[in-house]
Length: 339
Image (cartoon, rainbow, N blue to C red):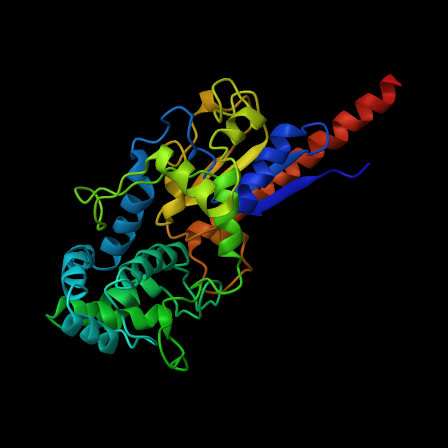
């Protein structure tokens, strides 16, 4: 007689939605927070932002904190690459970023690679209160980063100082280890494997629209990487075939799935302009855009600093759960009466 509602944020949000879609007789409804279910190969183009969507959303998040911030970041890539091309420049980068190990001509790429991930992660966990989800961070870390980056006219020095917001907010980290996983023990190595076997995410960047250098996602190259790295047969279309739908991922045959996304969360780009139109759901798929919501903020514990927009989202989610459980009880009584 129990009624089941699945919950999840990020990958867990995708699983929550897919479980309701795959097993509607067992699951009465799903709360899928920050779940980019429309970000896989072989699906219709559902976001007007295109494959660069996550980086566009991310750039807007930094611009909201400081309009000049994305420009400084955009200019830093070439400057850091140029410094990484000489022994003198690499030594300066080591000092500016307080690196644990010297950079060499072969390892200089690790710094921009780390910065790439840092910008993304910091936008993702841009919560209104201090957290330690990916790293110990202050409240609104993106604003703190942009403020620190703007304290000097030396762009690279400013970026290096601001990077401390992410790498050493507590002041207890002796140096920045570029070889260490910035997400700690969250299992990013396992995620790399899973992204090859089922979670292909075709994300590109476009300097005309975002603060990143141009980078194209080439499916064939990713397949080659996966087979070389992990020795597995890559499955870029696994999710489309497994969960189906009228055209793959359109959810037009599904119901009772609540999608929530934070406006400044990069993963919010994995939707239909971040809001689901009626024709992409059979019935009762409420959705909400959380104006000040970072990655699945609505599923985090209540906090006095929570913005009004997330309180509104939680109220909507609570109402959906009540509605679905009432409907589930009614259906159970009808089935019992029939037998």
